[in-house]
Length: 482
Image (tube, rainbow, N blue to C red; front, top):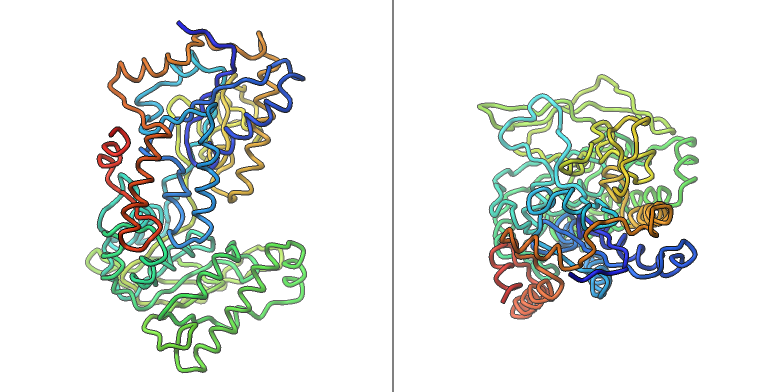
């Protein structure tokens, strides 16, 4: 058996949170390791249940985000590190247990992200034609175990939500298939689905006001450039009082978002004045309504199917408090998509904080606890980062700052542990490979991922595209193990 002196860390989840944490751990160890009595050597094994890495960057964000390829490229550079070992197609809790990891690793870090929708919780939410954003995103992003076909028969659709996922869903529902194919890596089934999409009218409902929405400026700019789509807004929504304007101005990102929304208001006016045209002045065959201060209260149905949505007008004060007005309006729609938040994944053997929707951890410092109560004890050597730690809020910037906080806590704890943090009984780096092999589990490593990526690039090149996603997990495995 080979004994090694390096620290051994297991990370569960190879999305941005897991990859950034691995990178920051190695960097901080090089910087502080000697001072903390830990040395500077570590091996990080990164476990991912899917056959490919990158999590939400590959499977949770709309394919037409221009920044995605840059983020994926940065994550890939991080993975191309001899001290980080990728184990894709290995599912925690099924292929390997917590006890088996703790026997082989000095610490285990959960970066498991989120794959499920929060429930809509409205009357009519169970009607045929009501969809959670997560499953729709899985479809258009080619998630390995996601749907291969999507019902796009509705001519009028509603999207509920005031954040970036709602914006993504609405944009893809209004997209021109050829335009989308030209600029993204969508697979053929998604192209064919969007090409046959019958949606001609879309209503986006945001419960609070213009200054309280959670859209990024980038999302808004992508919304502005939809071929064949006329944007329609209610001018009354933009009648902001001085307190609201002052409050919005205190935060740079909020101020920028509000300024961009006012730009969209002007665009919408021009589109109408020019004869119901799109952003380029061409005749629009689809209409995209944006409704602020509009809280859906019921999905209306007949014969078990969606036929409309009932919405209550709201008022939002400068501090973001929403009040209801008792004024209702109904809109005819045949499909309703809700993007009101994700629910981060649970992990076998780890307590879950249902109230805040994340793995139970101490005061948000990433140290896993025995249960969700504040008074509960910390479980040694177990940590959470990203959405698994804080719930489904924040973007890449939050994930990076999270990673630094958690890594700092990990190093502090490891430095206090016996033998400079090296507490795992089994220190043979090949032990995990033997365990997985004994179970017939064949992990896909970084070299395997590069084979899949090369194939996707070659397939894309045939159509003049940079990339074209493989969606069949068996095909991924065959490519990786070839």
